[in-house]
Structures are given as C-alpha cells and as structure tokens.
Length: 637
Ligand code: SF4
Image (cartoon, rainbow, N blue to C red; front, top):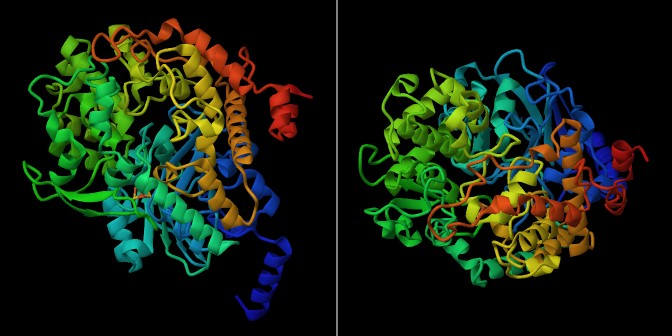
C-alpha cells in the first residue's frame, strides 16, 4: 500500500466511524475463479448482525437460495469471528462456521476455539466468505495483505494434524503464529458428518461443515498471525470487564469446576442424573466391574502426562495435550478429550477405559468427523450386531461393545467410504432408514438428520426439545449460569414438560449472542451483563441485556426462515423412536418424554412467538425483532 493509499484508507475508516473491536472488512473468496477481494461492512450492519453466527445467518439467507443444496458450488462457507476476538478477554480466538450443512441440508452454526479468530482479525478481516468450487485441491493462505489460493495436492490424504505440520513447514511459521483449520480424509470423501479441525484439537464439528469444505475442494485455511492492531473503543472498560469475567469464572461455584478442569467433571456429574449416554441408550447405569473412580476429573487429568494447550488469551485450566501413559499406543501425543469426546468415543460405544478413549478421540479428530455422530453411528452398529440386525458378513469383521480397535477400523472404513463404511458415512439417520426394520428402531437421531450431543437427553428434556427445534442441527440455547437474567427460574422440575418448554423458549437466542462475539462458550459462563459490558467497551456501543436477547432472537428467526425456505419445518421437529424412548433404568427410569412432547412443542412455539402450524415466526414477532423485510418474505405483508 502506498502512503497515499494508507491515508485514503485511514480517512475512509474515520468517516465510517468504525466501532472498536472490528477490522471492518470481510474477505470474499471465489474458488471457481480463484479470485479474492475484500468488502467493507457498515457500522450499522455490525450493530445489527455483530459477527459470528449473526453475520453468517444474514449472509446465508441473502446468498443461498433454496435450490442451492449443501453440495452446490454456490453454497457459502462463512468462517466468522466477532468483535471480542483478538482482545484481551479470555478465550477470544473463536471461530464460527456457518453454512448449509450436509446432515440436515439446512442451516449450520458450529464453533471452534484456538487462535483462528484472533489471527484473522490481526490480518484485517472479521470473516471469510467462501463460494464456488475449486477445479483442483487448494488451500487458502492469508498472511497480512497477501491472500492466495495455493495448490494442496501434496496435502490430500493427510489428517488434520499432518496437514498443520506440513503447512507449518511449507510456510516456515509455527506455534501460535500460524492457525490452520483443515478437513481430514473424511471431508475429502464427503462423509456427511465431516468436521473442520484446527490448532491441534479444536473442532467445528456440526452438521457436516467439513463435507461442504471438501465439496469445494478446499483442504485448509492457513492464517499467519497478522500485524494489524485491534483496539477497544474503551480499553480501560474492557480490562475491567475482562477482570470481572475472569473473577466470576474462578470463583462462582457454578463455573469454578469448569475453570479448574474444563469439561472433565461432566462424566461423573451427568451419570448421577442419568444423562451420561451408555451403550447407545440401552442403559443409564455404569456397568458392574468398571472402576468409575478413574473417571473423576482429577484422576482423568492425573492419569496422563500433560501440558496446557490454551487458546488465545485464555486463563482457563482447560485444554491440554496428553501423552498416552500405557497400552499399545503408549507415548503417543493426543489432545485431552472434552466431555463430548469421553462420551462419544467412550460411553456411547461401551468403551470405559479412559486411556483407550483418549487415543480414539484424537484419531477421530485427526480423521476429522464429529465425535458425537461417530459415537451414535458406532454405538448403533454395535447394538445391531449384538441383536443380529447387522451381520458379521455385512460388516466384514467381529464387533463388540467397547471394542476400541473395532471402532477405529470402522472410523477408517467411514472416512474412506469403504465397504459398509460407505453407508455409515451417510450418518445415523440415513443409514438406519436405509436398513429399516428393527435396526432403525435402535438409532438415535432427530428427524432433521442430525444427532444429539453426548448426553442422554431422556434425562434432560430441555436439551432434547432444543436439539429438535433448533435450526442448526444442534443445541442453540443451553442453560446459562444465571437463567434469572433472562427472566427464567433458577431451577425447574426437569420432568415437567410445561416448565421445560417455557424455559427453553425463554432462553432462545442467548447462545446465538455469545456465538457472534468471537469468544469461547466456556468463558461466557458468567453473567450476560458481564459479556455485554465487554462488548460495550470493545465496540463503543452502550450494549444492554435486552439488546443481546433481541439480537439472539433475530438471528434465530433468520436461521429458521432459511430452513423453512429449504422445506425443513415443524414436521421434522421430533426425536427418532429410540431418542425419544423411556429409560428402563437409572435416575431417569420411567420418565416418558413423548407423553408430553406435543404439549411441549406447542408451549415452545407460543413462547418464542412462532406459528405452530407452519413454524414461521409470527408477523408481530418479526416486527418486534426489527425484521420487517423478513416479515414481507415470509408473510407477504
Ligand atoms: S476455555 Fe478451553 S476451549 Fe475455551 S478458549 Fe479457553 S482453552 Fe480454549
């Protein structure tokens, strides 16, 4: 850039009164033509759509018409961060992926942490919007103002860690100076639950976003930490908000264990509630003979050599790299599993040895599929084999509950679409419906085509209702630390459908707000007020809770409108027979969610202001959310 251009750029930025925290530009990439360019977005748009899923939802709705399916070149892959990314608040390397996904063929919003968000911002962009399809495998390289599509032929077939190693060597940059988010072989082979993984262990995993990237023949996005400054409008206020958030996370009894151990305590805590899914929902009880004391959080951490693997500016004692301490893979470096990994690569498939689970979890991340969907697929196959619904001949080998080597064999078959793995690569719903009969009855999925996270939702109805009504194929609310902030009770009777439905409806939008800021979901386990303070100080807007809630609901309405246009409506808002079945043992024994399902849905629609017949947000709801343009689209008035 010449000095004259620099002055012109500075004048433009001042005249636009760019809020703090923003780079002010989106990077656009057309893989078909190989062209890339940047576009400014206005401060008004920033306030309305913030970033992350808010920005992604708007782009998806405006640019992906219904005849553009997940695998069409015109589908968009939005990699977005938000106004807190790169600022000194904990966990501000966040990335949100928005696209039309391969499992539901509807909207997707899925998050990963690490350094991508910060490095992108330091390169001068708030988001990357990718369209088209490359004629041959490429990767996107961003190094400050140099944006290039480069030949990725040598990367094809490599797993995600190998890809990051190879690009680190090729670009001569390593550690936190380089963020690489890539697809493994699963994405290359269009496995419908392929993910996008980066920074050695952070995964944007939901709704087959990795298959979208694979269809576009984009193997990786590599961002060298840029040199552009990101400043808060009120630095002193931002430090105060950051301190308040950190203090809360360290001291609040509801967040403290997350601060100390991340999601490790989930296994033991959730099993006490009957929410740990064991053997594909066939039981809720930890099998006899399993040494469950090994699953206490301190033991899970102390059972391995490990070192911290924190994300950008994060002070949580959370992410770690482990070394496998014993067994056939002794000495291998792995990523400490999240709760979802312990569950999906472990309990769901009857694997109860933490060492074996940790190893398998990293193989799943490296091949790059969603660990939850993998768990539901493999657990389903194991149950079907046990019951004779799938034969050894069909599968090609013997398989039993808890067989880590067998699960890994299935992972490779799925990843490369070999033999029976080709069917399984379609995900649980499609595979189960294809086999039909009693095999279908054993499968856990939503009628939209995705699967739940790693919980037994038959003991957590709020999450089942949220998963089935969500537009993105996965949880969209989640109970905040202080539901009272959003006018909801601190506690409810978890098996009272009316209370559950009102709670889920009342919390709609909260997570969309957080997922739009470029910040990790674990570092937002504080008050929403604190997060609003951080946003106000960063951007320079006076941002209050009410605006955050309205923003979240606006984003939810846009995503819902996108899905409705694609033909995904209320008829799909049901769990599969097994997903909605009644537990036969454990703490949730005999609690029958389906007896209350219709009433719950009805109350949920009422609570969020949507029409129960069509699923459309009501005209008055849209007007309240500042979405008159969407009102005209949906209702013609
Ligand atoms: S809490 Fe964990 S995942 Fe989140 S930003 Fe911190 S280290 Fe990363």
